[in-house]
Length: 377
Length: 178
Image 1 (tube, chains in turn orange, brown):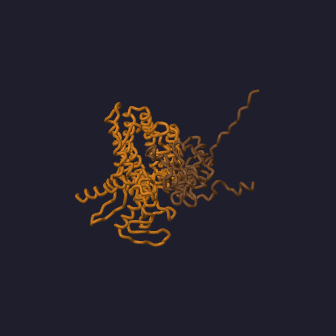
Image 2: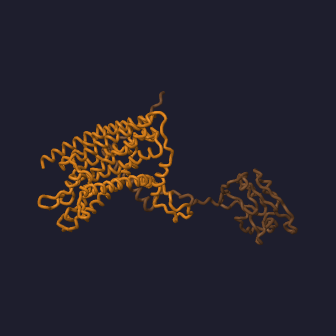
Image 3: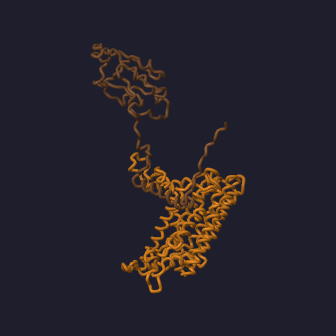
């Protein structure tokens, strides 16, 4: 029992620390990456060494210190609270927008089985059979934070942003669930660790179960259409471009957080990046084989085409798998930022049209086709 | 007769455009190409990192004034007041003193330019018969904390000085030939 508690605390600290760090770094990476894409240089002025005139002698760390500078700035800014509107809800809304994403972290398997100090554990905080439904449930709760923020601000732009966020997120929740239905049908479970295990399945005789003899049974290869639709739907859920109408700086100032300042606004911004990280983790788990390294199984590498096997220490495998999961998460998050800096914003009616009239029918068709194929096999 | 309107053809979407995704991947390809080209080599980036990297002005840029010297290091100015007369902003103040030399006779005891009044027209440089004042430093006047600091005296104008080899009083050979 003590062992379980200690392991759980260690896992919570690790995954929470990783998510928070990555979300923080992404705020700077987002700015730097956008500048690279747009042929600019981006923020690189913050430095630890002071104003040494020689550029090469300044300690700038690729501009990553802007993360620190931004954090300090936001903490020491005036914590403005509104005079009209509902002040309590106004203060509480950022928390409500921020925490649901963190709850979702509990169901994500970020590594395989690891043995340390003669005690072994699965690198997943909570494993229960309704699994991904918890993620859906809590990502819907995140709407409350945004709607309440928009409503309690007593500002037309905020209210419009909040209303837009509500209609967008509620429509895309439907789509989000349906796009993933094919995955659940194939792997026959909602539990994320079981889905990852299903993606690295072995046949009954102990040989790896691969598509065409070399492709691992990852969701991206079995459900390519679902993958594309899920990316669109999940991007809409994270409220980032091209689906950022709730924020829409050119139309609504800043949308639902127009009336926020200092760290309260920082929390909304940070929640957005935390959502990106969590989206990347769920995407990795469902479509990129989670912590699965291609051809690496519980006993070691088993290569296709009879290229031989390499046996390895199970604990080493566990850590390699964990590293692989974090690496995949990073790459997906990077790709998500590239999408954000490539596409212009959809018009508001186009977003709803895309959700209800295009993605929803395609997702339903995907379910039907998957069901037919599964019943034939 | 009524004018005929211009018929504007509507862009017909191809299949790949209607499907969104192929075009989105193309766009992402462009983004990623620029990202990797700029992250390692700054291939498309044209930004100048200002305080460290500066773009120099062209040769004919009229910048901060400077006073020129002769071969022996003395000031070339003969206090003829041509520049002060030519100056439309009246920013040059010269006080002359006697040298006692039969060739030069006068020199500038005080030579003061108010850089805040100066309009950088370059007329003083054109007016100078002895090539004593130039505006070819390629720098503009630096910001200061007080108005008094903008009034440049002889010492400050000599900071960027150089030796001029022009013959004082004009090229006499040239005058005789023509």
